[in-house]
Image 1 (tube, rainbow, N blue to C red):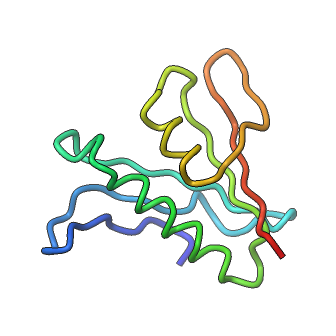
Image 2 (image 1 turned 135 degrees about the vertical axis):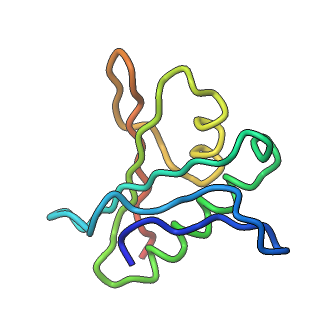
Image 3 (image 1 turned 45 degrees about the vertical axis):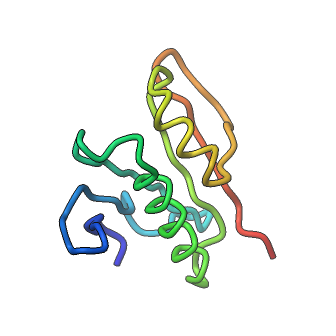
Length: 104
């Protein structure tokens, strides 16, 4: 449940994985991560998968926030997280930290 899930096309082809980097923390937040095969990048698959994972997470009573981290140079991943409604909450020389809180 709080591990990795496969990302698949509608015809059942595995094109990547997505999931949680552990159970909800003390703040009731979960961190997500994802990766797709290069042939499936820039086609909307990552955005759709991230949005679905966040929706699922927010259906769980023990989750009030979703976190993510991406390299500051990864423009494609930055766009995915922005489209999924995450906002930048911090950064360092290498990474941008992201967060989206559950609407109640």
